[in-house]
Image (cartoon, rainbow, N blue to C red; front, side, top):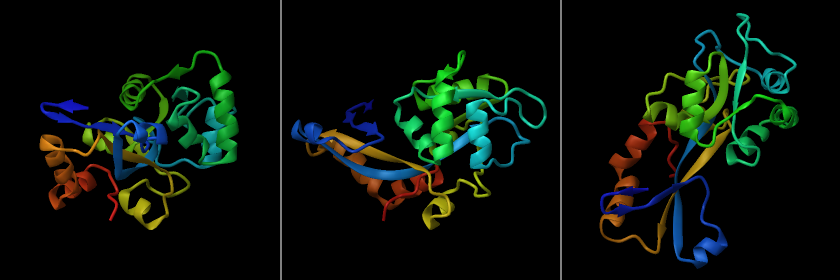
Length: 201
């Protein structure tokens, strides 16, 4: 991103060897729970089996009778891979979901959140960090009885997360170096933790 004199990119992966050879440097500044989301207040939890059923189309309605409307990410997107990694059943069902006609497919986390808030009965994925930092209407859904909190991610009871990186071209200097120092400072780390990030020690 660019903010005034600060040039730093936010990424969900470390720079590749080719990018490093081109001078890009990066470090993981946090991990945020990767979560299933909905605006429906009556959804207090899902099992992996139920998620697979929704994705495959075996179950098409919520318990209150409203249609489940999936908001997917592109087939080869990183978030699709994270969702597929939850279980083999979800991975197979996700392939079926991408073959169904009329699916809503969102390109970015913000787009996915927008669609999940807009589409009645939507079920989608996102990060806890985005939900908190953007004050979204969406609710993070407990999975298999485990709430997707920072504490659960830290103790290993919730295992699904997205790694977040800061990337610069070359060693940061000037305002960019100041921004990196702030992210790594006690104050910066506390802000990250308050907004849904598990910060590396």
